Length: 275
View (cartoon, one colour):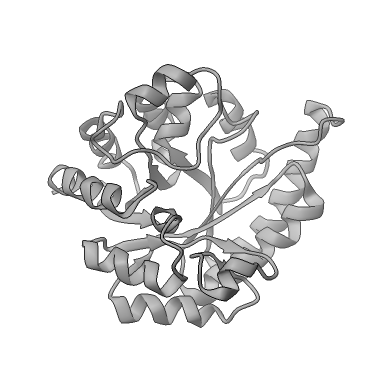
């Protein structure tokens, strides 16, 4: 039976205009045990100036490792989303993310199929995604890194579609990073879907959806960047925890919310449920 760790995606400081190290220290101060940093390719002005939490994969991976060690937290994974349907972007991006994860100590690299080109067919897109995942999984297998496919875009918005992507390449490195909020907004029943992927789950995004957002967007979108505080929306977190405890591997529930205050309230709601 799987143990559940509580972590947070560093998007919770997106509006604080602070650097990566500040975000890690804040997560630790709130009481989280794990963090999920976002990485990017190349250089980004706000990050370089210390006004945004994302880390360049051209930096030393030990920057991430050392920041976590100083704060006393562990890495649940890397948010390394790149469009699998666009191999000119995602092949090298994901390969670099896998190498970066292996060196900084993150066990999972999370991604999704991303926005597709308007001129490619569905069959063509699945060939392109298979190519990307084959390239990335070869590096991941050799380094003991897992790739988590997230329900977030046009093909992964249904259980069958997510399964089809995850099973494009026969690799033990490719699993599911399930997002509770995205699955709900897509119009599916998230607990049922989570049960369906339980044996392939490698990471979980703890994203709750407010009642107002649900009423405005459910069935009309395939995802959202962050949610409200866990316990203040439509997701049944007690049921989520019950499913995760049945998973064959330990799972980190990585909260995805938009403010420090929401992160604090999310932890207060989830900690008693996880034990």
